[in-house]
Length: 275
Image (tube, rainbow, N blue to C red; front, side, top):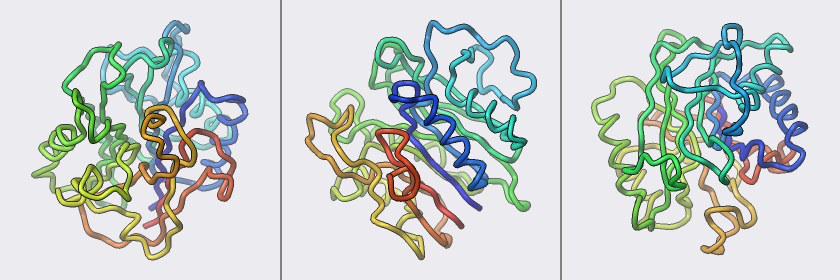
């Protein structure tokens, strides 16, 4: 099984159209089973897609409106043109940069059996940049049901929406989950800072696939100052993670789109694992 998580910083990126095509071609070349995407945006005032019948979209909420420039929608269109089918779901979280519906989503080669989305933050206000969500799909792979969640979490020291509270919500959701669960995304908690968010994740029972991997690189997913971290003056972090609730083997964990393994397409690098 091959997984990818990517905070795509989509539409905002310079030369976005070429980066979108590069991302799509990378997916074609690497044949991922499941892909989680964060900061998967669409312009709030863009036109709505007229029909979603032929693009394998499965909605988690009947009130969601997919716009013509939706990042995953256009990614899927490119993949379909090349003969590769992925099922997908997407949900908006909040207004980004004043003009975007900022969202998260999941793509899967396997048709979802269930879809769930929920808030990680206490606030659900669409104009609050600290609002956070998770969205997940259950699929059957080789006879086993597995959950894959795209997660975009908040910061450990945030006074209004602390990560500790968001982690508590995650853990309550999965405390009695018997199926395999994968949390894939931008956790906004550097793995090298002890006794904060990353430590709390491990102590609460989540297993970091990076640590489990037989083969790995340095794991760094952010190099340089990015939005949300400029005031912290931390410019090298491992904050994009793939976690799971089972302590099972991982063959390889690799950072991609970092100008070493693939061109950079976002202000985050992406994480790929092979089990």
